[in-house]
Amino acid sequence: MVEAICKEIELKKHFLSNALIDTIYFGGGTPSVLANRQLNEIVQKIFSTYSISKNVEFTLEANPEDLTIDKIAFWKKVGINRFSIGIQSFQYDSLKWMNRNHSKTDSLTGIKRIQDLGIENISIDLIYGLPNLSNDLWKSEIQTAIKLGVPHISSYCLTVEEKTALGNHVKTGRAEPVSDELSESQLLILMKEMELAGYEHYEISNFCKPSYESRHNSNYWKGVAYIGIGPGAHSYNLINRQYNISNNTEYIKGIAKGEIPFTEEILTKEDNFNEYILTRLRTKWGISLNELVQFNPPHLIKIQKLLLNYTENGFISETKGIYILTHKGKLLADEITLQLMQ
Image (cartoon, rainbow, N blue to C red; front, side):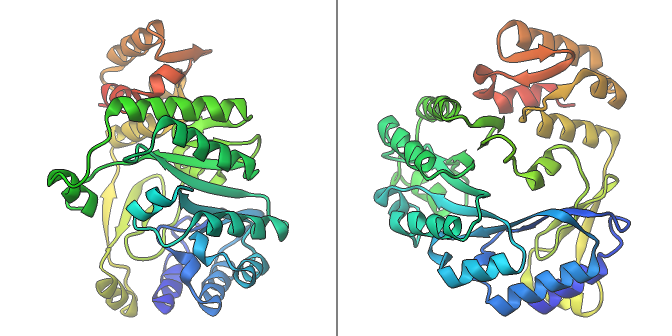
């Protein structure tokens, strides 16, 4: 697989017209389980193929149980300067229910090891809306994260999807779905506790200390072009979007032939408009009336009326033509977004 990934890096050399790469993100799986030589091979291929900014944000997603002193030291040596750690929970029962392999001790120890090696730029993931997660327990989770001193926290509500183990458990009655009211109350608790601790709610699921936004993810939300490498990866060059095949075997076979097995979507004006609404409304940058006008959507008057209505009812705030979700609006972010999309 590593050989195929390195080959795809070469094949996509000109996808962004040799633009300077400002962020690198190893994720979408468990890259922390890679052997050092495998990770190093991929990193060296990236740096020898593309023009990389001297100030690059280089993030690695890692499982808490993989955060050994030797691995962290190696990752730092190859240039990784930001970690995104899939903690999910500090509670034993929740971790067991999610079938996670790590413990609270693994998480706390791993983060301290990273910090002791001089890396401050750390993000952790937490999940709310879990069965048996009371509001008091959720507050405890948040306070544990804050006391760790990590500058970035991503937090997501548990979603129940069909054709998953959780979806089957809910369908058969082996697991109780969490009520929307409880999930909303835990989101409100999260927003309040984060604000009191000095974190900025810069995207619906992301909080950070000043200047610690995820530059990589912020580029997605701002519509910046990017390259995705590997099975199931997406790439975007402002004109079209490419989706690599997810099947590992077929991916490797295609790359061996010097061909990237992908499907392509040519984006229409409507696609670009909808994506702008979908991504920007979720962020502190909001949606700009001037930028909306430039899209020239056929139902611009309807959109303006909707924005005015949401503003008058306290779901959106407006400053100099920039519309941003309020705390109240963030609870209905998906519904508001669908109303504004074409």
